Image (tube, rainbow, N blue to C red; front, side, top):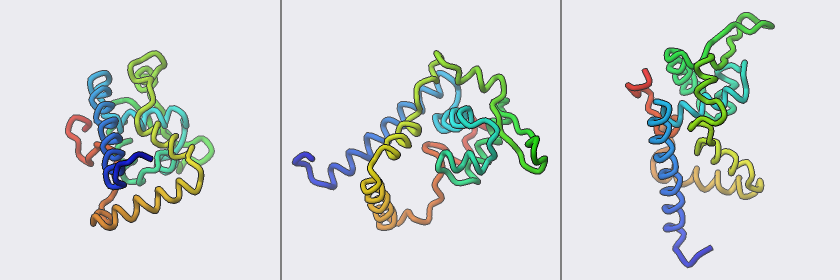
Length: 165
């Protein structure tokens, strides 16, 4: 720890996260025409082909309705495909389309991990006690700030981003 006040440390940490997300979002918009949130979903789906919307929501730690909406936008852009599962025709699987595969292929500007991927890996790497304390602290912060009733969406992704429709 430094000599900084805890409030300063917390605010600086939040600022660093937001800055990294903003930089990545601008880079993905420039290089691929997608937000970093959409790229995060594409890359997660690439690592788990054939999953359902619920599977993808669990893998990204995102609400199912948010992932469903983002998947619809990605499908409309021709980057993912929905198919009935061979084992259960009632279940719908998501897969990258050939265009989606090309977009996230290695050696592309989009190959670097998204900040969301880096944050999830960092959270997973924390010892359980620190992860639990962080979750408890952030939950308390959100409740105290009056934000607990907000439905969390993907970072920098509003439900109706016009350029992704």
